[in-house]
Length: 327
Image 1 (cartoon, rainbow, N blue to C red):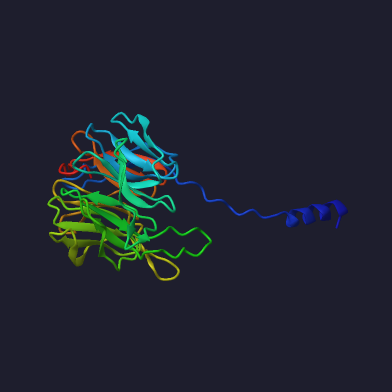
Image 2 (cartoon, helix red, strand yellow; image 1 turned 90 degrees about the horizontal axis):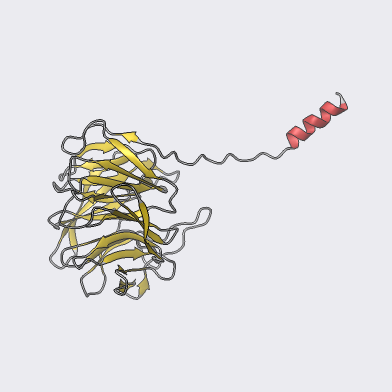
């Protein structure tokens, strides 16, 4: 073989092989099919913007604008009806889920390691810790919350996030759902959920809904007078559930929203799934990438905002979000 050819071949086969980096998710508009009473056929799911630093905690404001948390950037961002973006709040202690109470205070689950808590974050000067431990043990990484009419806070605690390539840290508390009565101490009200995530109340506040990211079903509980829960049941089955190599379930279930007719909106694998108040699947609003959380906003609460994987979307609905709470 010619010496030059041999040298070229040797160089080629000795060259390092670089692993392919997965392409980033495509943020694109999608088109919905009809869901009677919920969304008209051909309605566009509009892209507001991509490239955010974490996308969680969506909630509507009284003026019709919309807030969500950029957890990695440690801020809360605001979007008005014309899609203009402004910073609403900086230095949010890693805020994730958001909710307003009847006093107009913004309450968040705050996830900075070593400073995890449930507390008032806005307005300025009214910041307060509502709960930062259960039985003296700190929360691992609380996720989502909803505030009832009595001022009590329901929140989910799935435990700390695992770091890729490393074993998950040992959580100080096992995954559970908690309730903090107004002015009271945290109560652990539901255990045995693999990874509790999104949390929501029915319009009449008689039922608590909880998403399980590592389960097959949206869970429902009856609410007792003291805020605790009972009668756990499988409310609705996620339409798409994968299994991990170890045989565990992955539904991707995250945020929850509720409309004025008691329909339950669930972000999980495959898009935003809409269930009747009885748990029947009515249809799915498609997304171009995996969503994380959702909320009704706008002055008439007929716009559903969706955030996930660094992007924000909105879609106009026929249905109206429940007006009795901000979330």
